[in-house]
Length: 215
Length: 190
Image (tube, each protein chain N blue to C red):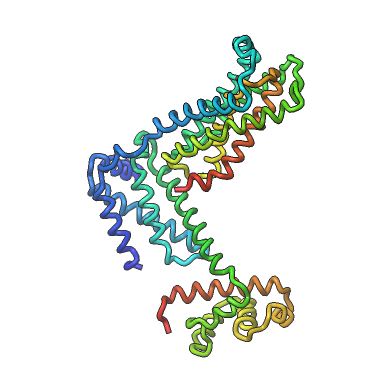
């Protein structure tokens, strides 16, 4: 057994000799993650503009409550998601999912419960749901790629969870981008279908996370 | 207070100012602690301890290459534990896969194993007998019937009064143990 440990001893000596070196080379998460987030938002917006295009009356609806509800809801979800990404790549931190998603959940639920807009849950067109969910997922794909690659600068130790959280953030960025194209101004529609789209991207992230985040 | 957390955190901070001696002392103490955990885990999972040092080294390299990511304002031990846990799980998955590729052989290949030197009954009957008799009784019967006498799983099952599936499981399980046992004794053992 002691013969076995000789290489470990050698390794330790080698590692110790590198003390104090290499700090400047390590990629800093505090730079990489925000950059990935900004890229995600731009890329998702690009995809939404390409696939769906901004709605023609975008300028008029900007200051309305229905539009703001979508934007604020998605920003809250994305903020919680970003915080979770930040914690899940640091080994000593436990992502407190419930606490950071509570504001977003409360906001969307309140909106959905007091939805008096009369907009149907299944949308104003036959393909509303399919359009909404499909476009959000498509817009989230480049965002998911960017976020996952940025997370590799950190040290995720629970890879499925980390992948799911990456997908969650990507999905909410996709949702945020889709607000400029979305014709369904009912709060219930947004709360239900946007959430389902985000959940799909989170599931995708959870399934590819273990492969892509391994180190 | 001179707890392990304090001592190790101090050494990790000293590393950043280039204190090789403090860092080396920390790595040694940490390696010893990781070794205990890894060995306990490998034993619990039924893997041979042969791999333990490899896993210890993987953990050391992982901690070393990510040492700048540790936030000095946070506790060090949870950070070390999470990395150790990740690397041990990663290693057991790999070992499990290796074990499976060794175990997932066809019936013919399994039978062929007995013609390998270590299992050659002609060459070393007493040795094989000694290994087999260390197995649980049910597995002994399965190994003798299928491995040594060349019976099919169906025949062996009929003989023992068990199901074919149970016999196959007992047979594979016992072969895994036999292979581990011969590995422990090292190559070149007559």
